[in-house]
Structures are given as structure tokens and as C-alpha cells.
Image (cartoon, rainbow, N blue to C red; front, side, top):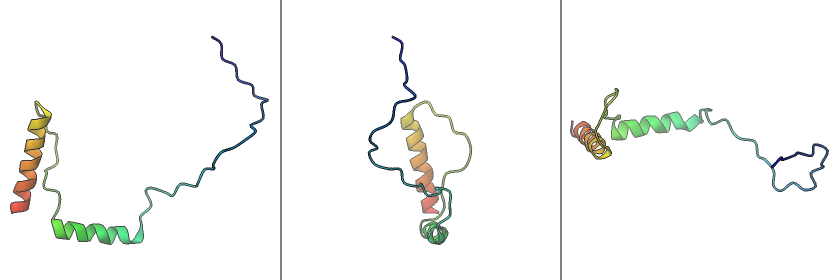
Length: 74
């Protein structure tokens, strides 16, 4: 099967239109203050940085839950 494209074909109808996408990396003025308030209220992430290797997903989930509980109890 050989597919061919007709370059001279005129598109007769356009459905919808594209909207300009806002910059997803732009900082919203209230976002920094809100994130600082969340961190103050709930504390930081209680999982240490690093690479963790587990034999199963269940073992990984248990370890993550244990670290979160340990960080909240301090």
C-alpha cells in the first residue's frame, strides 16, 4: 500500500481553534506564599533523598509509609 499526500488540496473546514498555552513554568504570585504555608503547616517531605531499591512494590510502599509516619511523629 502506497499512501500519497496531495499537497495542493485545500482544507475546507477547520473545527475549533488552538488557544495560546500559558507558560507552565511561570511563577504565579501567590503560589510561593501558598507553598510556604503548606510546608509550615504539614512540615517538609519526610523521605530522605537517595536511591532506594526494593524487591517488590509492596515493600517500597511499606518503607515509604514508615518513613512518612516517622517524620510526622518527630
